[in-house]
Length: 331
Image (cartoon, rainbow, N blue to C red; front, side, top):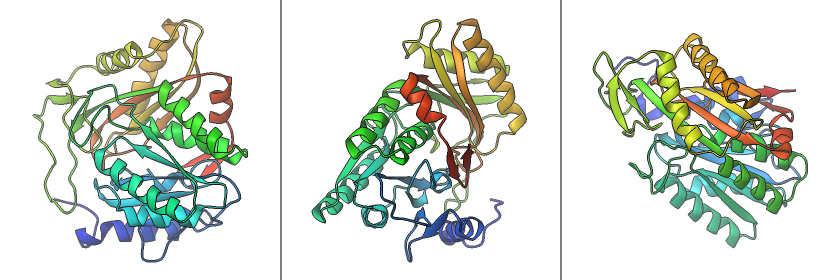
């Protein structure tokens, strides 16, 4: 294993210290906890908290800031944060208007976030939850019942965060978040594995000419393995599965996220996006906004995912609203 770290057991702590040192105008860390919140928290609005295992950077701490999240909780690498850490995040960001928890559909995340919500509600804090399950690759998988939550979660952070920033109440913010979940679909693939620092070896193996289609963001198995094909063929397969699960017709409007998993060059992500744009254009599907880059990674895994969200005027307006966070700036 070759990584630019010190002690593998300290990697999350040292990463979070580095995040705060780089972005003090955006975030601060709760003392003794793996929790990042807005520097000015709590704010007088509905607060959003998300999180999960570390290793997906810039998710989730990179999206703490104006127009997106108020707090992010970092578990150990690929491990759900504990209920007490989520509970402390809820308390730290609550400004009296309630807190929405954005949870990816993994058994540990759901259990721990729900326990934290119960603890906060016992303190009189109004808490609601939304579970993201955008991955169309497999119905059930390692660590999940039902579809996994992957990079489409970024659209929930952005759109629900904009609704909260605009003054929506907790009921309205949850409604918009659920609307995003109902309209976003994703699927990914991997060319090469990643290595969890405390494990010290790759999480799976692929032959030199082999890829895994439908791979999860923690290295969970996908739908199948095959010999690597041209980029367009891979995109056509992934996008075909996504579109088959959506009710899009000519004239509809969408937003697209081409997400790198940590080890894929930006050059290759733009090659992927070119094909996505071609396919959608041939269907007369309008693309209102495209995002290309690393938004929800898997440490240094090589590969990518595609997320597509069907937009109406409400979702489009909130998606295009301003945001200012360490990893997402939009004016």
